[in-house]
Image (tube, rainbow, N blue to C red):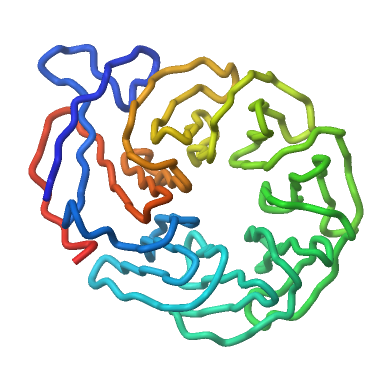
Length: 302
């Protein structure tokens, strides 16, 4: 079933908004069935890469390689795909599984892993109760680490940025802290800017830990940044989504009640033209933005 929704227009977001009244901006929702949802548990991971589209809940991973869709039934807490390679990391309660083309080739013991990011050095950083450690992509070999507490990770490709009770920047060549700021919250970082979500505030920092702005926001359930770092989305407990400029915190758009349940995950494609949203009831929606409405056929959830 295809549902086309006209959204409120707003200024200052040229990729989406066209001032010509005859070319309004539309979001199109792709959903194969309006009753049967793709997952029975809350969605915790969404990702779109050159290789895959990934949807994951606590006991199921749905993988679409743009030719076919398959389901992997495995208990896990997060899934992260390499942006360019068919390499995937699955976080479980007491271990981290490494997959190549969805064939497992290594398992790493890690107590309560919380997040993972890929580095330019053919390696990845993993946060857990053991701290933040670096592993080789091909072998899973431990290369070193720093003992810090982190609930979320970001990277510029070289250094690793950590969210948690404090915010850290880690030099992963020398395996030491570059800086630390006493600010709690979960960190989302892309292209040199980090968005920190605390219980009632949203803040932005740069690569040096400088706070760019702070605003009060309650009811935020998840955060998503565009790949270029210029825009970010806030998903709310009431199923709505707000769009902001990252450098100024200027609100550009309010998309009300995209979901009936709290939004638990979002993912923006690198082109910023495709948005996935997932909610607590297991429903996943795919939104495409065009200047004019088009009929698009999809069997992603068939």
